[in-house]
Length: 207
Image (cartoon, rainbow, N blue to C red; front, top):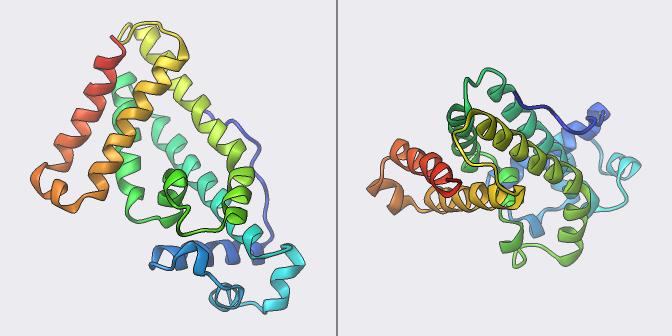
């Protein structure tokens, strides 16, 4: 049901290896501000000098890696949604997608928490991440509108200004991210129950 709303960039194999190396290092617990070009290139299996054939500095490498990672995540979401049967099923798949990637993909977590990681990254890195990822983040907003249009056509939710739909979905997704970040809360509330609360919460807010 969903469509990719941007033209995918094609990256050289060495660049892909560098980007994947960055995501791996972040997923292993490396702080974004502490990443070094030497460890990125070592993980990617290329020479340090090769990195500067493609990037002007480390900040551009990191921003490009997060852009690439976000593109791959969105592709996965689009693939999951293609067989959705209705609005509620689309929401369930979004929530399941988020649960799958939130803890296991550092790139996903960083992009989701952009406003909270200033203590971990320089303003230069944050500015470049914002610039590189703007198009794909905008695409996510357009995909949310696609999902909402399905619910409106079904009559599952009211026809409202897109602002209210975006607010409803984003607020519930943010609440779910808090749940996924809190191990104690996850022990107290079964994940399936939390997912159900998000889906039903969105529908309730839009009616």
